[in-house]
Length: 189
Ligand code: ADP
Ligand code: MG
Image (cartoon, rainbow, N blue to C red; front, side):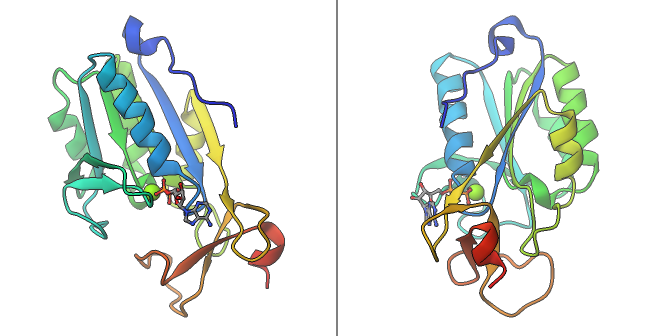
């Protein structure tokens, strides 16, 4: 995988939107944290948000499966993000699929203010259908990175989050006890 190079926006104050998408376990949070840590190294002011519905690991943090951690503010409505970004250069948003459609216009507003916005989110739900606001976010982003996990069945390239438990709601929070990464053919098994 080519490592994503930061847009010059971070230096020139021209706003931009980056979306990191993929299945569960594909490394989205890891990649989000990597980019945000680099922004901090560049002395940029960073603020991180996540939907308040997602408090699987910790209420005030984003946590990757390999236990990389950054502080994050939980927000119920994406509009709230606009109240916490004075002086902020880079806005990180994890689990973007759980926000409502307003997340796209909020990101456009943030980029319009000259901020670099980096979102991570599931592109598809457990049925392989586009997840919530992600199609609009992907279409309006300046930069898109699609990551892949390793298929737990065959070791191939996984794009799907297979639900191993038997709930049928689109949103069932959980990790290894509920989902596994699978490739296109093993997702159909
Ligand atoms: P995401 O945010 O996309 O769900 P994370 O960034 O939290 O993913 O975690 C990625 C890490 O998950 C990997 O670096 C690896 O350590 C771990 N992992 C567990 N299962 C898998 C899998 N099936 N494929 C790839 N990575 C996996
Ligand atoms: Mg994640």
